[in-house]
Amino acid sequence: MASLEIDLIKRDNPLERVMTEHGVKLQRRGGRFVARCPFHDEQHPSLVVYPDTRSFYCFGCRASGDVIDFVRRADSVDFKEAIRRLSNGNGNGFEQNALPQPARLTIDDQLILAAASNLYHEALLRTEPALEYLDWRGIPRAVARRCRLGFSDGRSLRPFLQRHRLSLRRAGQLGLLRPDGSEPLAGRVVIPELRDGQCIWMVGRALDGRRLKYLGLSLPKPILGYERVRGQRRLFVTEGAFDYLTGVAWNLPICALLGTHVRAERLAFLQRAHRVVLVFDNDEPGQTAAEELAGTLGHRACILALPADVKDLNELAGRPGGSDAFFRLLREMGNASKEDGHASSQ
Image 1 (spheres, rainbow, N blue to C red):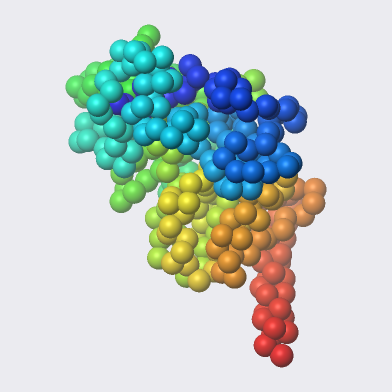
Image 2 (image 1 turned 90 degrees about the vertical axis):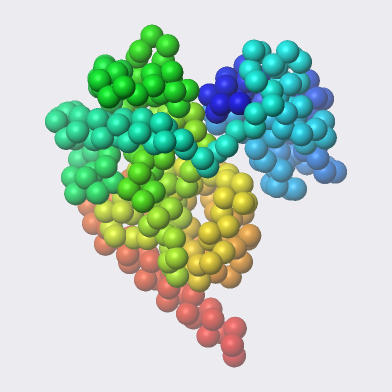
């Protein structure tokens, strides 16, 4: 089953509705829902549902995932059966005997992603509004080139793929084209994830505030900047794509989770680091996620507290002296850690 087809099943089965059908009593809290977790005994709600990402996370037993993961756990079934139940038993015309291969890209996939990434990068360099947006976010042109940032003008990808005889159908399944030939990433700055120089995924950031901020491809979401932190003794972990780009501009070994909740198996690479500095958003979900991750990593992790009036790392970079402020906080955190270590040895 292709990733696009799985995504359609998720969209057709809102997590809140499926949970309610399973007897979970949801209560709205702002833009989220909370409930008592059905997977462990508890007196107070610790399960949180995030409608914008179609995901859930329990701060009690750490159950997490999307609507498919919920059905698998709630009904004690495997992936295929969860898909069948969400598809009302008829499969919605999707093939039921093919499991997704999240880490495997065919040669055609690689060629399509490379073509799109190159096209978008060239478009960025000649699109003044997109370059001005990067300037406003404090991202230097050198970083734009190093990270091969791009921009979708919404009309060039289809003819480009046709000229190079690349599959439009597969481009649609990857999330690059709609059936009418339009581009979902149109009008967005595109941030690719590169592995050995090859684009394996990309996410687009809208230039205006009237649309969904971020939109990624239909492929599984990776760790953004994995190659920058692989094998590093000290590394930085942040949430958002532009926080990551800020770290790149400051020459940090940094990666981005592209959210607050990531499955434990995807974070196995952190176990090899001697020091993990967590620079998460200065809001409740960000700080809660940072504390959870720090608790999992143990003494190797530390949370860098941003100034109270700053939302995230990228916003700090836009302040006068933001870079100096960041490295000052980093030094102070290091000195505090040394003092704590000295005190504990007394």
